[in-house]
Length: 264
Image (cartoon, rainbow, N blue to C red; front, side):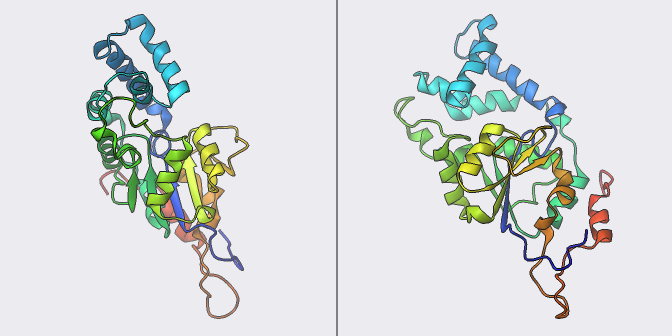
């Protein structure tokens, strides 16, 4: 990658979604999660088995998640109990260590944050399975966006905040203490990407084949970052006073992209 004469990277911070962004949507985690939510609706809320899937879809479309929808409708669902049920049964063994992803993340000199709608336990388990739990400076998760939920006296007292809610985005950016105009936001969800763009973030739609109008970049896999957004690695430091800017050399980038054997 030749960045001769390039200026400083336009990004001071990168914010990554987790599920279906840092690991493939094809692993089967999302399918298992949907089944667990359906089971929760049947076993814990008393809905008919043949209505659970359609109800889950409707709650997601209307409220952003099944938990948010159930609480808005008056069901006194404890968030910890819900997450323990729907995430606690996930087949985490399907998520494998990703040495190539780890190398990419470690090569990025800017701050790196996780921003997920999931609870912290799920985020940590997933990151540990990927082998990248030490690659991020901060995790912004369900608990971050909903700090008062456990103190509520009725289900609708505090609405559940999640991406793509603008209120949730505002909380996340405040907690992250970042400059939106110098931050790159990566997510697999079109609505989340649109919310990020509305907040002034540079946006990357991950895992899709067609770029949405609110996405500045389209990325099939996060490990393709060096090819698609090489300006992440630009450096504003001068090299020997000849006007050239220090950046990653081609050989360095090739070594980053090379797969790392599991257990290495």
